[in-house]
Length: 85
Image: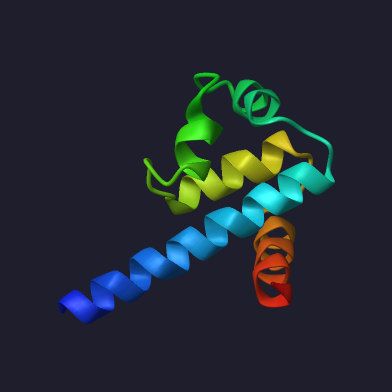
């Protein structure tokens, strides 16, 4: 992978994470609530939203499940949040 492509992927991942954070906030859930609902360490969402942890596809599914959403719905809403900004 080229450096430019890696930088673009990192930027896109950060935008998606920011969108997921806004969906979480809109649903009235804290980072800790989402983490615990996934059965994950309570600081997982904090690490994710501070961009100190990467976002894998399986994690998107777990986050969506924790927020009582389908992964595709979370993905769409997160992207909509990003596009509206």
